[in-house]
Amino acid sequence: MNRQKVLWTAWAMIPVVLAIWWFGPGQELQARSRVASTVELAMAAADQENWQEAAELFGQAIGEAPTDSPESNRWLRLHASHAEFMSGNTWNGISGMEEVLDEIKDADPVLARDARARIASAQYFATWKLRLEGADSAVWKPEAEKARQHFRLLAEDAEARGASESEDLKKNVESVIWLERMDLAELQALPLPGGC
Image (tube, rainbow, N blue to C red; front, side):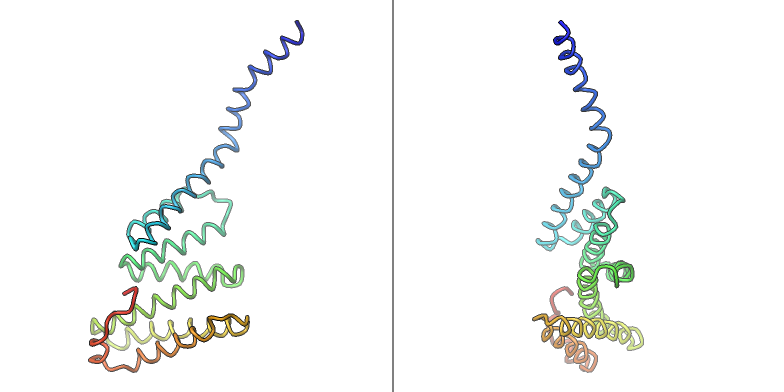
């Protein structure tokens, strides 16, 4: 009789234990699962170059993400800003990526390199667009200079690490210089680079 009472008590406690878990640690697990699903959808949208949808989904993931992981939050913000840039919101996208880079320069070298590469490319494309739109050199030259500096820092870092992309990054520095020196008529005759 005593054993049966213990079994019934244990059986009755199962829903209580499940409820405690569900409203405690289970909520965090569910939140992380929702964020992972949203990020997966955002990455798929980015792969298909549906940048507006990718930006929205990365933004949604930022809102859903637990606040206890600043590294994940920075990664999400970098990708959201990049998607925003690619969707046509040039200056907000660049500004968002620069904010992330400022936060992680020394703390996370891998993400910092990724952010710097995205910013450099974005500023190169922005310079190209500004020149094609007939912007004054006082407007586009600072963007070109920023792109060149970012590519130079990436090339120096890659060379110091013995990374294979060092030569490609040096070529990117030369491309920015070439873009600055090129006559506007010559530039207009060229196809837009990818990302513009």
